[in-house]
Image (cartoon, rainbow, N blue to C red; front, side, top):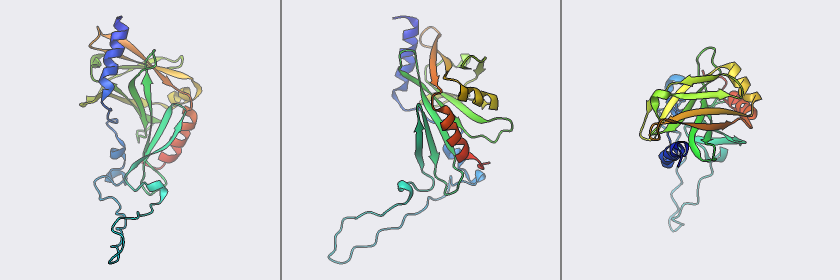
Length: 222
């Protein structure tokens, strides 16, 4: 087995457990400081009335509005080709959402994940994170190249029991390049397979529609 195949195998095995979301998670984005609901009691649903004496003891259910999603819960807003849009219900027009996509290697196996989330930083279109499995060589960081553009290097900032996270900014011109492109390349390095680079494909199919919905829903969060 070649070093490249060993690297892919090592990173793929680390994905057996589900990976956590980025450091700036959806829960962070609905914190009380942002006018959200984190740390506050969830909206209480009406309790079913006690059955009349001699009536049925089994619940007949309580109708819920908006597809059964209550304030503070996350839900899948939609899919756009290879992108998924997940939001947290806030009861307001603006909702914290994230775009995500599993990253595949050259053989089509899922190895890592890319996430895009809103940020209040001036001059930055959105925040992004690459979640790589344990066994990634952290000192080599994450490299990303959008279409035929320049390659950029981003550092890993934290690891948990499931993944290591590189979190970084996406500039307005990079968002435009992603809208116009067909794919981007993301490179991580496997520490357990001779420091072999593992090349991952980020599909940009459907990104324009996905980002448009993301931008609309997150407008006014900050």
